[in-house]
Length: 260
Image (tube, rainbow, N blue to C red; front, side, top):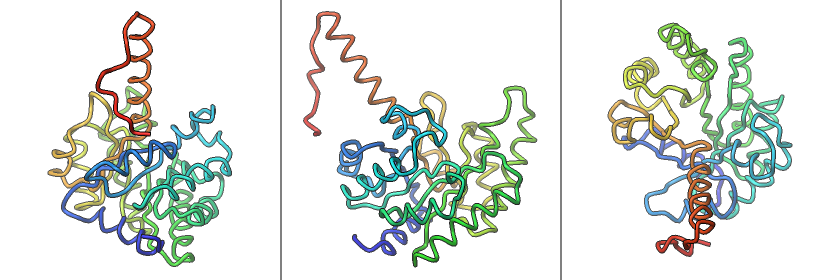
């Protein structure tokens, strides 16, 4: 698939299919080619946190957008599946950031609301979607609300859920095809969000040791589950474990595969 419109439509269709879309977040070309070459993988997502860490930057738009886009463009060029990018909060101009992402071949993206005033957050969603229309594609915006990730440990969970529903519905009404609610892992809260947004409108992140299996998320009506920075941490955990074994007098794992 070389046509952007085709890739965008494919990515959108994957979100509305009965089967949940499982997206493994990647951070460089080799991680992208390994994931894309794995049977069953139908699309890729980039992880801004992981790309920033690769270049020595902290998460949160500290990596320059030019450098961020350069890596994402390299990923897009190396694979044959649709790629969605983590746009963070839009680098001060969500529409322009989206336009530049589309120029390097991206057909979808996450956009954080950072709990800004709702009118401002909706305007950013509209700007992203407008950039997609201007480019002639159905840009698959995964409109993110930070209601849960920014809630304090002692926050009223019912109130947080209500805020997430309010923001998510506003993003859907503005035209976003799906809403991303990171930080939600409890079955009851996921079920409530899925019911409030409608079938195949909710996306979540898989948190090691806390999240429901993808098969159960599918039963709850979730459209998509991604992995964020956790896949890079899986890789780094394996690296540290191998180093520990070597330093302790052992060898590298016998089941190591030549994936690069």
